[in-house]
Image 1 (cartoon, rainbow, N blue to C red):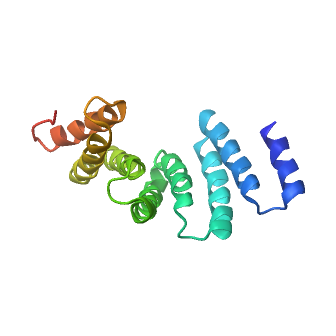
Image 2 (spheres, rainbow, N blue to C red):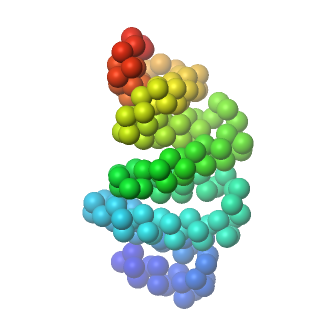
Length: 167
């Protein structure tokens, strides 16, 4: 069905339209759920390239797409460096557009911190996850699930560095 929707949108809007990019993202999400990360990554790359042409390379609307592609690339060992670059770019776009205390920025930082944790760069993980945690605590308070989502990996990074866990 998703392939059919993509074909219909391409015929209706042409090959480079935001709705076509959305269909590519939907297909990528399906491939991700089917545990086909390389296929998902290709679809996310196509969508991102299209959106960069439509929106411009500095559009903050690209940040979620950069995060989606990075989240797939981090699962592929030979693409983790690319994942880092996509996360960093999403952070820069959101920080510029939304400010240094944005919950969306905290999500970007949390994602990058998890990549650092996965690749055993514990100091970078602690620094990045700590910043995400600080933003989320300020925005939502200590009892929010997003705070807890950052706190666990942050403490994992601290333990790997042989530092005391945060509360």
